[in-house]
Length: 136
Image (cartoon, rainbow, N blue to C red; front, side, top):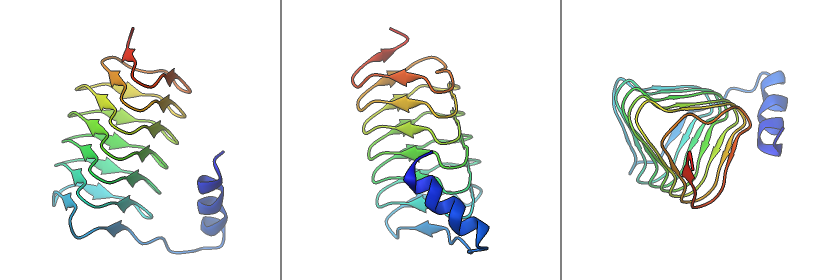
């Protein structure tokens, strides 16, 4: 478990209230659902009907298109792009500039390296190397 998740869990046990933070330059569609502790960074976009779980990060310039679902603690690095109806599992890290195609499911705890292109489902705890095309 990452140190970020450990801190969130410790605060959760202490009944801390987690604000949802959205930078003023980010765009979040009105019907998107943002859970507690979600952080939306500058120039990010969260599309219609998207659902983001507890403690998710959508970093600078990342795009979460329509109907995407991010489970708790999913972390999108700067410039990551999720096409429509992408599902990202709990605790997954999507690296900088990663592109994920329409309807793809990323399993819990997966790691997608910077610049990867993901065209098919990635299993839980799967690793996609930086710059790779998945599946190869």
